[in-house]
Length: 480
Ligand code: GLC
Image 1 (cartoon, rainbow, N blue to C red):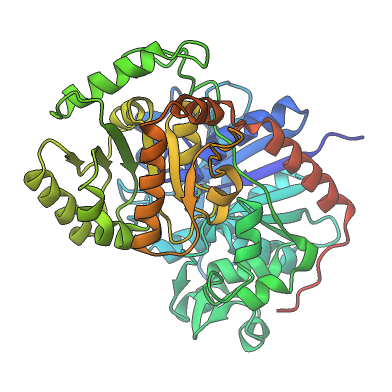
Image 2: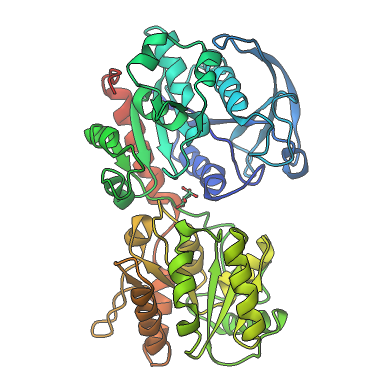
């Protein structure tokens, strides 16, 4: 069979520009696809931060002119590659539109994403991929341009949703800027509540839609998780699929990781104890045997911070130390700072983002907390398990797909969890974990966690199958 050619589009690609998990995925999946013989090229905006992160950047002769929008914009095309060197990354540069140090800080993000999408559509005409693989709302208008303006030779489109909570909604004025056929607006293809909705547009116009875990793919068809798009998503039938993310097993390897104070492995866990003591010392916590519970998260409701806030005092009545890393809503930042003042021997509040400290927490903690209200996939529990840190999670989305409750009767299970979204259930799950922590069974849970396969190998194979299916399937007709 002929080589499958993919153009992957994303606003974030690790290490070039990272805000969240999207960057980790688009920064690592392509290399595993290439290993399977798939031809992958990536395209992203030339964010200012990229200059600080890229090993090298070269200018190409290519200049892209938007062609569909009401106004014309020009993007210069630069090139770099992912760290392993075999995946080219195109950087589209327009300093007037991409004018912030923050990935999502531009003065007009709606216009920026529209113009970038038009430019990617123009680029796809010269690269001629089989599939344009879009990610998240910022790329949602690309399938619309492709289906509206290209003929029979048009590439197929796949839109991957990493978080349905961010849809990219903008004033109707942006629809006028897009210059798309009036009937799209009349038929409601592109809007929700009178606003142009980029993610919905992408869902309506792409050939296939995927999301980042099988459970989340089911959940988003329900009113509870569907964020207003559940009916549309249910209507996709088998054109909506869930593929669990993986993590980079080379970069995240406790046996070789240089960012942690001591290395360790499944066979020899001595180094993990050193990591714990060193973490406690670094954070000013007494180096006790108490369970160290890590939380690395955006401090927002989605991540279960409201039930955690409710349960916090109760949880701290147990023998444990809570280590928090992250920023977010002020009330939660304040809460952890206050708890750290009140319980200096039990709580360490690090209200910042620091990749190296994150790594030390993954390696040095005993447990890792993710009580998410919803979680499309979640990468934190995977990093934690890889470093022998036992996840305590709410069983939702990708957390449900990767974490199984430990059963002390037969020694199966790699973590602890709960279903009903409540502070009481959260507290009970942590307390079950603590009981096991203080028993001879703990080592079994730790080892089960480390043995859990969260590498990209399997999932890259799933994407390969999906790509082939998309190429073989009929184009999806547009009807919302
Ligand atoms: C988003 C989701 C997270 C997922 C990540 C990568 O950040 O919230 O659950 O792991 O995207 O797909």
